[in-house]
Length: 604
Image: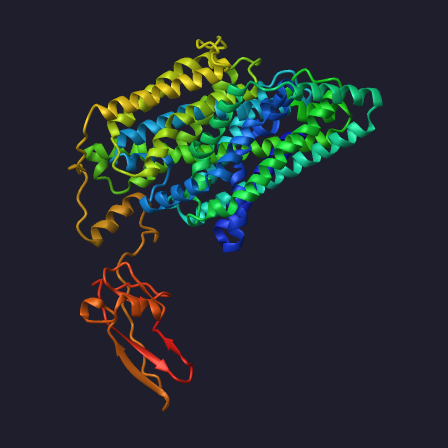
C-alpha cells in the first residue's frame, strides 16, 4: 500500500508542476534549462532497469542505447538545426504532419507514419508497464506482477488523459502547454538521475564493505564480461537504431523539435544532454559490480531493486523504484499524448471531414478532444494486453530494440523530408507499407507469441538486428524502385467538401470550429500604424526619409552602412531593430531626430 501511495503522490507532484507552469508561464532562461532536461525523456525504464540487466548479462551490449543519441547530438548538430528550422517553417505539429507535408502534402504518407508509430509504440509502452510492475512486485515481495501491471496502466492512463487533454481549447502545440509538459518532464529527469546516483553510490559503498574475496570475485566477473569484445555488427545496428529513435520516436520529436523555441535550441542543449547520457551510462557500472559481488541476481532486469534489498537497504530500493517509475511515467505520458495528437490529426480528422455532416459541424474540436482521450486509453490498454502476452523470458532490451526497429522505418523518409519538399508520395507509401509489413511479420508477431524469429542471424548479427536490417533494406529498395520508375506530377488539389476560405472572417470561423470560440482564436487583422507626436523644445526638429529603393531612396550600400537592414518586403529598407509591417510592402514614414537624446526615435 505504501508503494501505491508513493506512486500516486509522485504522479500528483508532476501534475502540480505542469499546472503551475501553465498558469504562471516560464522565463526564457528557465525554458532553456527545462528544454535541456526535457531531452532526457529518452531515458525510459529500459535505460534505467534494462541497461543494468544487459550489462550483467552481455557486458558492452548495454552501451548502444546511450551511444546512439550521443553520436547524433555530437556529429549531427547541423541536421538537428535544419530539422527544427524546416518544421517551424512548415508549421508542423508532429513528425507525421511534417513528413506528409514534405511529400506533396500527402495524407496517405502522414497516415502511414502515424500507423507505424502507433504500432511500434505498443511494445515500448508494454516494456514500461512490465518494468514498473516487476519492480513493484520485487519490492513488495509479490510473486505475480499482473495486478501491479494493471494498476500501473490505470494510473498512467488517468494521468495522461488528465494532463494531455485538459481544456477544450488547449492545443498541445501552444507554447504555454509545451512549457507545462516540459517542466513536468524536467522534474522527472532530475528525479530519475538523483535516484540512479543514490543507487550507484550505495553500490560503491556495498563493494567497499564486501569481503575481499567476494570483491575480487566480482571484479573478476565484471572484467571478464567487459573483456569479451561485443559483436561488432550487432553493436553498430543497435547504435544506429538508437540514434534513429532519438529523432523518430513521437515523444522525442515532440520534445526535441516541436517544443524548441528556435533552430538553435538543440545545438545549445547538446553538450548538457550528452553529459546527462554519459553520466547515466557510467552509473550502470558500479551497480553491475555490486550485483556481481553479491553473487549475481537471477533476474537482471530487476537488479536495481533486488541489489539493495539483498543488502538489507529497503530505502535505497524504494529510491530505485521511484526512479524507474519516474522514467516510465514521463515516457508513457509524453508518448501517448504525442501519438493521440497524431492519430486525431492524421487519421481521424480526415475521415470526419470527408463526411458532409461532420464537415459542416459547428465544432469539430470537441469531438477530436474525446478522440484523443480514447486513443490514450486504447494505446495503454493494448500495451497492457501486450505486456501480459509477452513471455517473461523476453528481456527488456530485446523488446526495446523491436520498438526501435519500427521507428527506424520512417527515418529515411524523415531525412528526405529535411532535405527538401515536393517528394514523391507514392514511393514513400510503398516503402513505408513494405517496412511496416516486414516489421510486423519478422519482429512484432514473434515477440508477442514467444516464437523464434524467422530471420536467422547473418553477417555477425543476431536475429533481432538481422530482421531490423532486412525490413529497413526492403523499405529503401521499394522506395527507390517506385521513385525511379515514375515521373510524378503532383498538383495540389483542394477537397471540394471543405468550404473555401476567402477572407479573414471565414478563416476565423474555420479555426473556431477546432479550438472553440472562448477567446483563443487569434486576431489576424493588421495593427494600425501610429505616428509620433512632434517633439517639443527648440532643439527638436523633423525630417522625412524615403527608405524604399523603388521610390528613389537610398542605395543598398548606403543603407547597410547606416545600420539599416532589408525587410521581408522586396526592396524596402529600415532599421535592423524593427520589421516592416506595412500591408503595402513599400512605405515612407516620419522619423524624429532629437539633439537632446542624440539618437533616432521611432514610434511604438
